[in-house]
Figure (tube, rainbow, N blue to C red):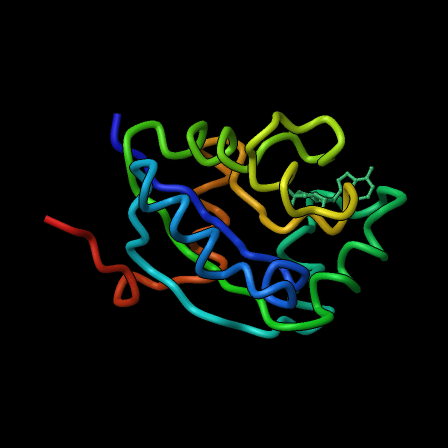
Length: 141
Ligand code: CMP
């Protein structure tokens, strides 16, 4: 089933010059970027994106980190895009991520873990709408 998911290359991924490497992995594994932009979120914008985590012990640090530098946000489209993206990223905690995944290879810790990906169809829809309007989406034939 063809799906869409939201992907973010986080400030650590941008700082480590991994934009090209991450996008290459997506493109070479069946995930096509159909919308993309670079943004530097304010703290309030990061808090809005991660509102579901409000109240958790890591919320303050996470939203400070996510607003610490530019990010790249993308809509990825492909067969089972949500699960496929999560497989390519690896587990949230890089020390638990499978060998060869983006987080295992490049992430420093559970917070600064290079990439974000939607975890379910409902969250994908909400997260895509947080960053993109219809005119910014360029589906491939
Ligand atoms: P992400 O996939 O973007 O979803 C929520 C983010 O919160 C997660 O990646 C991590 O960056 C961060 N996160 C989740 N759990 C923890 C934790 N226990 N400690 C610190 N940060 C966390």
